[in-house]
Figure (cartoon, rainbow, N blue to C red):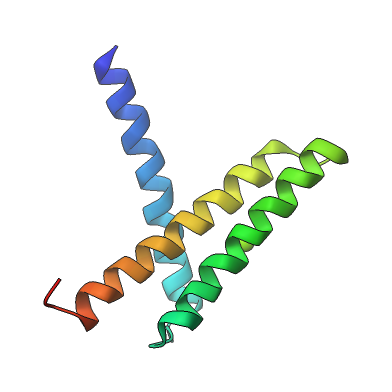
Length: 90
Ligand SMILES: [Mg+2]
């Protein structure tokens, strides 16, 4: 049981990691401004809200909610990675 939940956790992180890699390749120039970085996260979160609304109120698919949430998590990871680069005192 614990092994299965650990595998499930690792599978989710692996999806986030793959999305982060894809995003870095597609958008290699990452902003240095915290507010622009947060705006990217906000944009992905907004798309997650939109997908959830479409799922609940229209004929949207739940996979889209999951996909957008993974993109949001990947953008959070990208900001965290760059914070460590920009502010090595952390
Ligand atoms: Mg998106």
